[in-house]
Image (cartoon, rainbow, N blue to C red; front, side, top):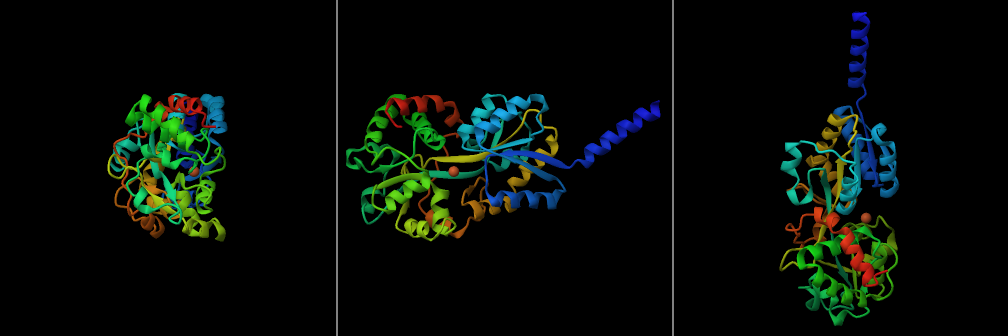
Length: 338
Ligand code: FE
């Protein structure tokens, strides 16, 4: 009997060791991410099984699966979404001195870690806007009368915008942000629609004077990966990093948390640690044009060229985007940002 039980035990331990895999739920859909999974497997023998989808359906699925959820990690874009998953109790705390050492503290919390970084900045067309006029621009100035009917930005239901407004609430307070929003919304060139690239295209076409979009979309367009006409449009547009004379430009992250019932926790931590290696950080930045979260990683030439004036806001912890999300969205709606 003892022999049978111990051999069953041995067999199941043996199987656990053999099942070198992790299950990653992700909202990212970049080819480069799949190459990273392959690199990780080659290095460690651990296979990455991917379940991809949009954040809300994946969140719902994880909640419904409960303790039976086979997912180990959840990869999301925007700190606001990571915070939402955290508040729904989807993540567990982990200990990794390596992650804490490599990822700056304003880009993580106890439950999730920033893996890549992006800035949400202003784009202008030098044919229509004098550089002298905008070189010292702050987000706060975007409510000024001189930008009446000038600004292109997507809708208020977009989480990147909610996070941007949350950062203003954090830095200026609710009252000032509310006043600013009133004027800012009045400066839209038309009712918001389309994605970030559409806003840059509106500026390239001279329909709007300023666009607000994430850096990687602009770099993607410039690279030619989105086709010749978007590349030509991007060339007519210049990036402008707001608030460079004070707290710096608004940044956000793409990040990962380990799921509460992760069946392969040790391998999941190994994967996270791999993602902050020089190899993975370089690969992600080179292919998606996001900024590495780890210091002293070489970034691609396009990113170098557009980032000369980049001063990052390191004072605002990205965690507050989630904490202030409801407040910021309510203010946006109140000020009729559709
Ligand atoms: Fe995006």
